[in-house]
Length: 283
Image (tube, rainbow, N blue to C red; front, top):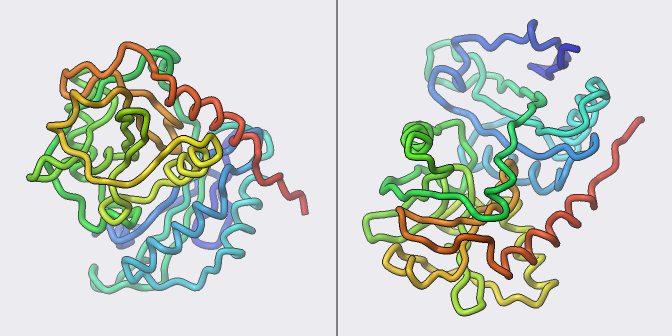
């Protein structure tokens, strides 16, 4: 059955949904998005994602009329109209609208649609996945914008090398985050992750902080450098699509040939957390 999209105030079949070439999201990349998991027909951490979505729009000075409650209502309407869709993801996009002069924002356009996503091999979650690093800078890393130029470019290269993610680093050798994920390491039994001021604050990242406190695992933000890789006893990525993914190698340097004990504890607790979801609203 064809999925139903929400586009510019209407619920349409996917084949009927249209984006104008004059839309600034298409024409200039002026727009923001968010992306969250649907588990058994219910959204995971919906309000956290919608708050970040609104924060991203504010960071770009992208004016719009939507409040969190408005967006939440539309999300549940989309789920209701796609009642057979039980597991996957929902993407929400806000653009600068269809500009008359190709540069000035107009009435913003809002889109929501459901996605199936191919899962990574189970072995990656047991033995870890390989990643590489690249030096480049993301503009406005705190906002989830439509601009993924460098990320797409380097992810293509990563896949050719048999790796699943690219870790962004700066010229000082500081590892910041993945192109679509946050980055954590374990050193001497403590969990570390780069400061939030330099990265996108992932929702799964937020959950990991909560779980570590619950499990009484020490966790803190600090700068992490490539020269420290050999000191990592464990490392992992977090994202909506990947969940919590152990890392086995960084730039060919072996971290571990299996997920570490701390990573395993966090992964197990995260699976329990995924079941605590906002229930589907039928009204």
